[in-house]
Each structure stands twice: as C-alpha cells, then as structure tokens.
Image (cartoon, rainbow, N blue to C red; front, side, top):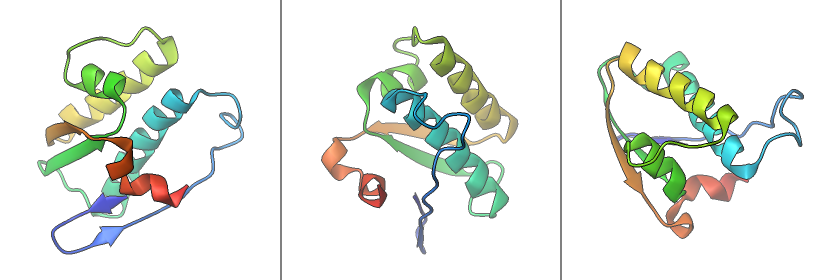
Length: 110
C-alpha cells in the first residue's frame, strides 16, 4: 500500500513459486517492501529524491533500517542490502517509523 497526499494505491500479490511456503513471515515482509518500492517506482508513484515514510510493524525491521541492530538471517541481510542500495541509488529521503501491527492498514489486504 502506498499513500500519497492525494491518493492511496493498493496491490496484493502472491509469492512467486520460488518463495511460496519457503520463507518466514519476516523474510516475507522484506520481500514485500522490496517489491513495493519497485512497484512504486515502476508506476511513477515514487520518484527519485522523494521524501518517503516507510511504516514498519516489526521492531527488528525497524532496528535494521535504523541501523540499531543488523539482522542475523542471511536472506534478510541480502534483501535489506538490496533495499538500502535502491534507496541510495534513487536518492530517496527515508523516514522509518515503527508502528503497532494494528495500525498497519496494508495487513488488511491479506
């Protein structure tokens, strides 16, 4: 789910076969964030140098992106690296916000 000042755009996707029933819920959240950023760029909702707030309902993800604590899971480390690389390449100004899962409107899409 991507919210702008003018609209809310939602998309639900099933995991591709390569990940279906093979990743943990946390790994799935990293995949979803990575795909969501690419989707936002590809649909021109997100542009280079945009100010973006990413709301995370998992404390360990927040700690990772806030550089408080590095994840130990190798899959997550790799996915996190790709997300951070994309943020740098596109010169996004990111604000990470940790929210309670009950405030995660995207989870209602599941």
